[in-house]
Length: 218
Image (tube, rainbow, N blue to C red):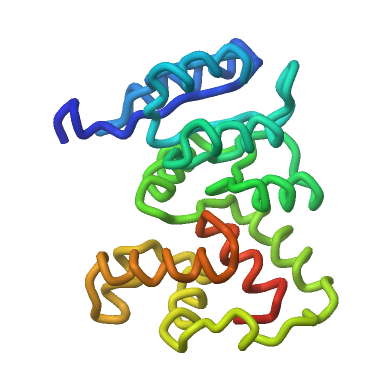
């Protein structure tokens, strides 16, 4: 992968030593570069507004000034194409669910190994929804305790193929893997995903899966 094909990662993290450590780790990974490291969303905001073009953003929740979940909403407005992975010490239900509903592409704990963070960046770039096993179990636990949905599946008018793709997404498959499993092109999967997002009124894979589970669609 040449320089122009590198995955550009931005890191927004207020702990200076951790920020430097993660930035170095990203730069040491083949096909990946840390294009910016900031101690707050406010510090990164001008870059987003003037030249914001990261592929993936690693975003801490406990930031000074605007917190990470509120900042996530602003990032989605400024650069909707960026895949945002929450990277934090928190693993409680409320913060996880709020982050996913706000459009996070994934959620990792700061105890994650460098290799896990790098893998998560690649997964997010490919349309996946990376989560550490501990976080994933919290998400499943949260949704398992939700009351049955009031809306019927038909209310969203999802086709059988769209429900099939949603189910595969919930199993953690990325777009290319879904295409291979269903023997269709990645472009066709993308077309179905756009339709799913529109019908469910979401804009990310994690948002679609979260709503599908909560509404008992899959």
